[in-house]
Length: 403
Ligand SMILES: Cc1ncc(COP(=O)(O)O)c(C=O)c1O
Image 1 (tube, rainbow, N blue to C red):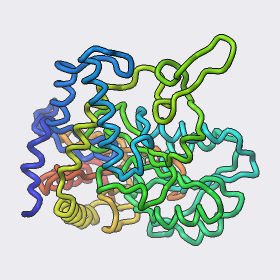
Image 2 (image 1 turned 60 degrees about the horizontal axis):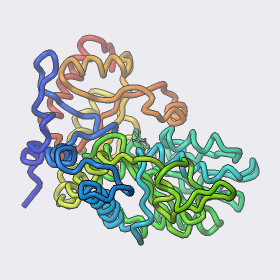
Image 3 (image 1 turned 45 degrees about the horizontal axis):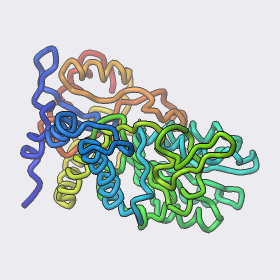
């Protein structure tokens, strides 16, 4: 049976709402955050109603229930991304925290050491590296918007200590050849860090197959709540990492006259009361992802993306149009500022993203200050595209001269 977008859509209560002008919600900003299905909302509700207690310190039943939920979610995440062991998963607030945490392990690097990122990377995968003493270099992109392998080979050297790159980019939807990148990085003795923020929504994850050293993501990018995410790291590396935050839950013993004895991974990196309710939501979102029929869902999204691209092209100037990407499409319009475009679409109930998309180096590379972006999720439909195209026609009428 093929994918049924209407049945899928019905699991997301917010999609049945209307804006203040009575227009039905057309939600096309899924790369920023996805909507949350009933099952995840209910899991959060149930945890607060029936399981809420602190973990790793309570001997009573409620605490045990809460801890069981928390730790079994760690196992579910490890299974979902094919980590070699459960201790390789550290809960945090999301991809940004994960990348900052990883960068904090490399304060010993010097300006002679190099870190490679790409011109398309999100600020979250640039700024944490730029705070270190190492030199950050940018791998370019091809005119079509793909990863520039030649430039990568030119810049990769024995000085490279880390190659940090998004699995999928958040403006052009570019898909990066992570396995090849990791292999090349390892050949020069560098580590490969992968920003998986856009990856959870678009297919199953296998960190061992990619052979990356670290991988980070955020639950809200794939049907989960905000403020929760996780970091994967190979246990051989995590065992040599230092905590960034210190507090309860990470030590075996604390002394007055000698250093504390720390717990082993992963607890060593989760000081203080964690985001337990976030983990309850993450757990349900992983279950939701586990139940998806990826083949039919991806086919559906590809068709929708194809149709969107075809119907957009006469209206706007799509940046590096390409169907072999994840369904994120960005454009510029002569005579129409992206913020004006997004505001007028908003009055029609259509939510899109406008601005530099947290990818300023890419904007500079393309010679623009911002763009408008649509990002699809499987609950989007042909009718959503109809609304968008109608909205763009309206904008053209109001503001456009030659777009
Ligand atoms: C590619 C990429 N990396 C990192 C992030 C940061 O994610 P978060 O804000 O959930 O930490 C985003 C968010 O848009 C993203 O698209």
